[in-house]
Image 1 (cartoon, rainbow, N blue to C red):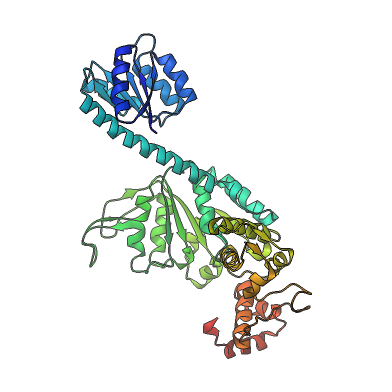
Image 2 (image 1 turned 180 degrees about the horizontal axis):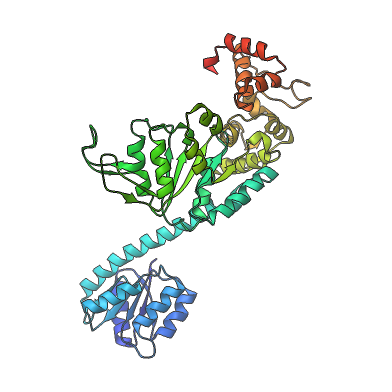
Length: 455
């Protein structure tokens, strides 16, 4: 129930307000002076404080200032017989929601309290939301003990302290590039501002400039009103450019200029707009080969590659695979009400043996599927048959692959193995062929048989 603190040196006023408010279902507490009020505020949480302006020793304005030092979000209403524009303005500057003028009518007072209690509830909800975000995006929540992951986390923690530095995150699809970008944002001085994510690969090249920089009314067919771009909306916050390697050549010079000057013009406009934005870029591609082919500007590459962070693929993170799997098992079992969130030793060996081409995202999906298949939440070898991998000496003897009971298409399996080899070798055919024990010529022939475009 909402609790209101009434502060006034006149007992009669405190009593009248108490009766008014408690008739409406509010709980109240009273303080006869500012010092007493501060002691209560340090001990208890109040949804609203109503304080008289004129009191001996400590007046209402001084009390307001002291309250804001203790709890900046605490809503305060000033009670005064000297209601004026000047009083309201000064109280507002010090952080008061508003003021009630003596003598007060019950109906008007209750309506004002109701209005500001809604504000108080919104402030409290926002506070809880901020606390949840802080917990969600704390660096300590990143699961990983492998050396390459620990180095990346430590580096990200350092660059988070530098709110103007451009960050460039690389890593395969599913390694958590956007999550890392959000963690950097929420651990920087920009954490109270917006984080705007833009997937450069998902926006048509004809619209990317409008999405990033906005447009003026009539700039092109269908532009029936002015629109702010992502860089403008993200002012004082962070803009995350995912899949930056897919940014069109036409848009690249404008992005380069923005990174250099932090200014731009909307499409069809002439006004120069400035925006204070930290830019974090990410890609699962190698940009240097694209630069060599002329598909990505060299000057833009150097501009975004100020502070590079490499997210290692899951297959290179050792026991992190098991730690992450255990985390996901706990989470999904809790959500599904299954009592025994556990991974058997055999299942752990399967998790570590599998190559995880889809990285953490694939692992999360696999664990969810396994939890659904498990009656009590214990993940066993049986629940992981869909991965097609078995540890030595289990179910399939020394064979590295477990044949599902329903059988499998050899052509599909061959295609999947070739696809994984290309993925693991970053599409280098010579390296992929070596992984399969083939010559490059035989590997090329195999690609043709399997229709290279299907991989």
